[in-house]
Image 1 (tube, one colour):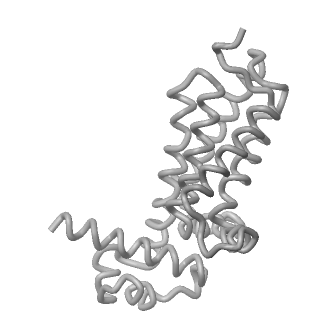
Image 2 (cartoon, rainbow, N blue to C red):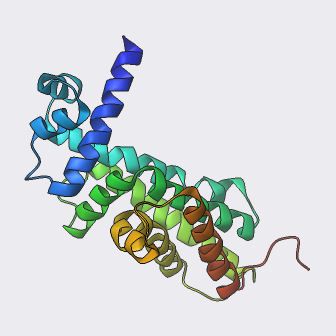
Length: 206
C-alpha cells in the first residue's frame, strides 16, 4: 500500500504542478487535477486533504531540490568546483521540475501569499549562507570583488529561466522541447560566464 500511495501522490503532484502553473491557484479546480492524474477526485482529498495543502506539496516538490542545490558549497572548499556543481544542480531543477518551478516563480511574483513561513525561513537562511560564502571567497582573493547576493541573483535568473520561460527558449531554438544536450550547453555557457567573468580561482592555482 505504501508504494501505491507514493506513486499516486507523485502522479497528483505532477498533475497539480501543471494545472497550477497554467491556471494559477485561484482558478485551479481539483477536478481538473484528478482528470490529468487519471485518478478519482476523492483521491485528491484522501492524499492531501485540501487544495491548499496540495499547493503546498507542489511548492515543496521544488523548494526541497532548491534547498538541496546548495550542497556543493558545503561539499567543496574549491570555489570553481562549488559554483560549477551549483549551476548544474540549478539547471537540473529547471529540467526536472518545470511546472513546479513556474508555480514557485508565480508565487514569488505575487508576493508569496501562500508560501509557508517555514519554507521562507529556510530559503532566506540558504541565501544568507551562500552569499556569505561567496563574499568569503572574495575576501580570500579567490574571486573578483563582486557582491555575493547579486551574483546569486544572476545565477538564479540564468538557470531558472529554462523552466520559467521555457516557451520562449524553445521558440528561439526552433524545437518543441529542450533535451539534455540543451541543458548541458546551458551549464557550460553559464559556468564559463560566472567563472571567467568573476575571475574565480581554483584552490590548486598558484
